[in-house]
Structure formats: C-alpha cells, structure tokens
Image 1 (cartoon, one colour):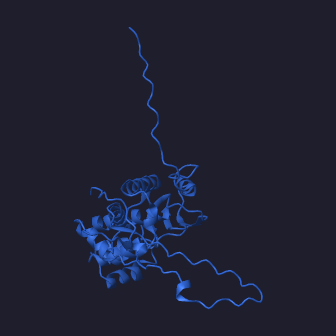
Image 2 (image 1 turned 90 degrees about the horizontal axis):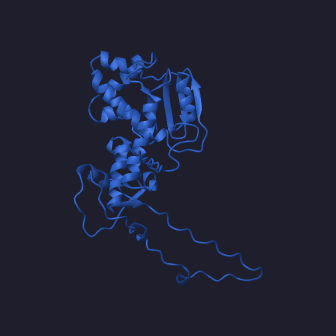
Length: 282
C-alpha cells in the first residue's frame, strides 16, 4: 500500500495589532490573574475591579454604568439605588442588599451586571499607549455578583473587535462626532437604528448616543457601524484650517482684505461623504 502524505493547510491570517506581544490583551492583567490579585486596574479607557484574580466589575467613561441601565429601564428607581449605596456601600455589598431587600432578583442582577461588565471591558482593554496602574486591596462597592475569569473577558473582547471589523473596518467612526449622509432615499432601518439616527446631529459621538439612549455602548457601536456600512452616517470631518498669512516685508503695507481674498467654504461639504452601499445583515 502506498501512503500519501497530505501537506498541512497554511495557517489562517491574523490581523496585526489584535493582541499585545507577551500574551493576552494586557500582560499586567494576565499577571494579576495568575497571582489571584484583588484591587483595581486603571487603564486609559477605564478601570477593572478584580477579586482573587477575577473581574468583578468594570467601568468606562464610554459606557453607561450598571446604575444607569437599571434606572433607565425601570428595574430600580434613583431613590432605591441611593439607599442601597448608603446602606451597603461601605460594606461593599450593594448587590447583596438589592437582592435581599427584594428590589431585584438574583438572576436579573447577574444578567444586568454581566452586560454592563462586558460592555465596559471592551473599552478598558482597547489599544492604549498610556501606562496602566494597579492598586492592591481595593474592593468594589457592588460586592460579589458574578466574577468572570480574565481569559473569558479577553476572549469576549476579541470576539467583539472581530465583529465590528467585519461590519465596518474603519474604527474612526467609534469616537468621532457623527453626521448623517445626504441620501436621496432612505431604505428601511430597524427601530434600534432609527433611534440612533434620530440622535445624530454632527456633535454627538457613539458614547453620547449610548448615554442618551441608556443602552450598552457596544450595542450602539454595532448599530452605528451597520449604518456606516449602509452609507447612512460618517465621521464628521473637521474643516481645514487656513494657512497662516506670510509675514509682511518690513516697510511694506499689507493689502486690505477683500471678499475676493476670502475663499468660499461650503459648510455642508463635509456632510456629503458617502460610505459603501451594502447594508450588513442583522
């Protein structure tokens, strides 16, 4: 019998810049997980709270906090949240207080907590050139709800990056003020996307829209990138600054400015940039 050796297929290409050399999205976070550290990791995009090497809470300026999501969706009122912080915050047991007093059931708290945690982690573990710091021993006021291993946090962050890249590969739209494209006919969009479109005014960013809608920021990014792929929105492009006038020659009288010397700039020209016309499947 003749044995035929089939060569192994070539490895799949990997986009550069996804992982930080040295293992994981954050070498410091991986080391803290290995040593089962407790405290708070501070990065440019926000903070991760660890307990015995697992992530118990995350917060970022780009995302609504757990309190905002619970209050906005009617799970709690502001008075109930303030009472929980006052009564149980010093003991770092706010989550347990909410469950024990019947304000929220354990399963609903865990679901909302995980949603807010993964939402913030995506931004905390974003690319950054700023140094990270860790403060040992600091426990979060929410207390234990549903700790998440660091490996699971990093895996989900990478999955979300890949999803956004698949929908629309330009990350500039995630942080820039957004403008609506000038389209002769608006195709059908989902109600979620329509709510996002209604709040695009040339000044709001994705984070601003997320806070206005009280929705997870990553979900808002998904909607915005799909709208960008369909040609509905684009980042606002800053108007070019005029070149400085040359210094006058000594003894020479500069000419008085006239309207002919002032170039005309159409204020709407930056709103007309179109993106590709393929609406990604939901």
